[in-house]
Length: 348
Image (tube, rainbow, N blue to C red; front, top):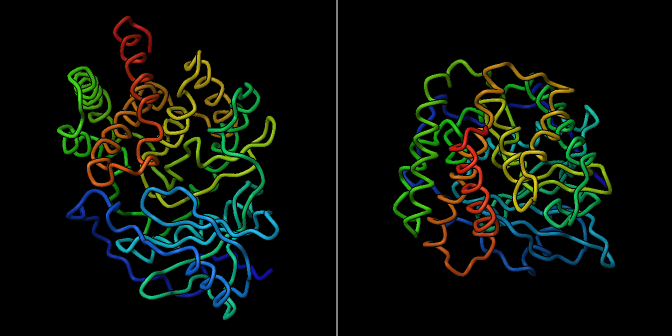
């Protein structure tokens, strides 16, 4: 199989503006590609030389296809959103190469037949990566403490690796960046249905403004994956076998990587705080948090949950029949309410 591990030292970077500007639309869902399965299979054969069966995978703003042989997953064809900067695809490939070189469980980029890392089809830009073993963490009924600890270990090691990576496309505006939480929560507030849910979102925003905004410039920053949710983590037994989907990667507050992982791992758990503590122990075994990072971590966890449900509420107005856009909504609201009640009682 032809593969490539791109690096920042080889080849020119795709031009990218140094100015981080907010797009006119916060969400890119309405620009998601809409290829058919037959077109995806034809594209894979034409540009990568693989004859495989394909099936669609869930995705927020891109279109992804699992390619299999005799029912065995082999590759993933990733078709970029029409609004995506091509430089962001290169950023993802650089990150994957660095992570794999450090021994982390990430996919490998597959060369096209002409030795390129991307290909185009009717205005769409696509690339191919290897499929990894394991099942989604979201489908693991009873994750063990060892698994949570290993997840933290993987993310801590990744933080160390990515701290050494610089790429111009990492400095971009993204609605999933915690730095933009105030604007995102305020923008989507009107899409939240229900008085109690609105009160919770308002309370989280107030906490973020009071406890994080005044110190946000003092928090360490680096390139992070930025979306280590339970659908982007593959597991086998007590080990993380895959970290996938680097599409939200950017340069931002480093500790938010840990906050994101904790926020989704805590969903639906009987003892969510114990889950977060286990992940944090694994993370700190690799990268120790500063005292300020420890102080803001609980607020960042709640902020990510609030951003997720707010964005989901808005996206449902665009695609009310797409279940993926609300896949974590109810558990997130339940967890948010529980965490806010515990915070009010003095537990943080």
